[in-house]
Image (cartoon, rainbow, N blue to C red; front, top):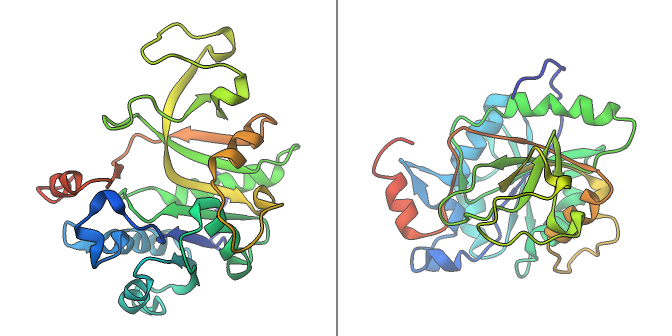
Length: 258
């Protein structure tokens, strides 16, 4: 990521930490997944240190399963030089539902950052990502999201979306279905690469218009609808990134630096 625009560190950030972590059981029976430790620090601690180093001050964490353990561990955020607020959910509301629930606490002017609490991405260059904001705000046509995409990991070989010259597209966007293993791309996908969504992105609050607070809602349909209008940009990230989706993967990360 190489940008030269000024950085806006007033943008708030939402860390998603409400999931049950079913695939991580029994580890998550008594500890919320984002508090699992990688190389001596919880996944959330890694994120908070990244936010602090980038100059971000306002952080909201959504809570559901064992959420009280997260708020007890992190408190007000003073230890990280941050201000942490919490967005409780009686039950996990899915990604978009959780974001909608947290919007009044985030109170973004327009854009805000969202990071999945269960990914491990040490040294992520968040300060460089923040410079995308100015470009998004100056765009002639409003962009509703900017996604960080990564090479497809072994557990997710087919990826999620296509990245084509800085624009993110989906199968639904192009009204096609690409069979697994097919190497020839339709003309609409020339110079496009299919990648995996990292769980890190910048969103405009208007992406969530029409959702009701307290109701479950998935993020993917909102993104795909915006993609059909060329309102989603993105970039490929080649740094260290891991979806901590199984006890085996957690053990692998704890065997040594990544």
